Length: 108
Image (cartoon, rainbow, N blue to C red; front, side, top):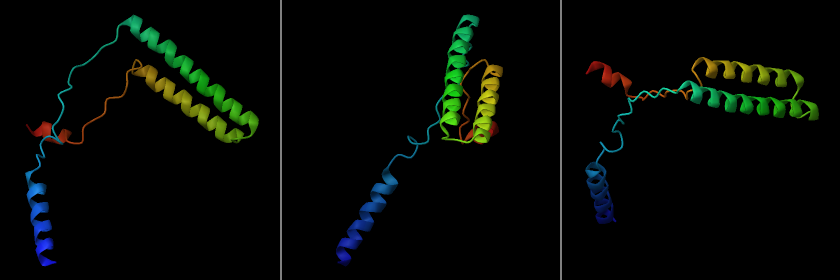
């Protein structure tokens, strides 16, 4: 039994330390800033407006059918409005997600 335990422990250490860690945490170089043209912004704006209108319709139907209370529905509608305005401020661009290792780049 000790022999198998020793072999298992040895293999775990060997395979554990030999795996390349750098491939899992390698930062991606995605610093390219993309700007939308006015036409593209208008097209995205129309699509986003349609999306938010449909979401409002769904919430209104839920309120009609009694699935959610009127108070909950109003809160959800207000949240959707705030979300739409925030997207509009940022020209309907998707949010930029920060990497967890941003502090490493600042020191370099």
